[in-house]
Length: 89
Image (tube, rainbow, N blue to C red):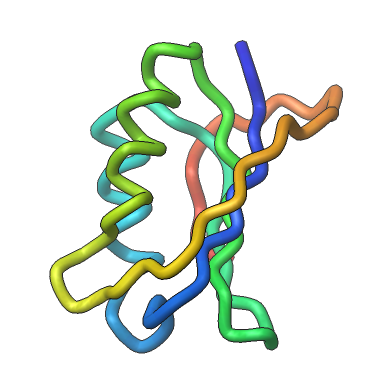
């Protein structure tokens, strides 16, 4: 199990990015969280097997139809916490 922190910038708020992210997370067996930040970015904590994370991150690079992803930052997230579901914060 691996946990990563993803920060996505661009036109990512007001385009249902979080709702679509949750759908993709469920589709790829990802647990964790997604939230809008005050800086106008979307932040995701994603926890899953490596193969599932690869597919999820690929989707994050383009996002939902109305989004325009300008930049994505992915870092390993060190935690002992185990997520049991994916939630929108």
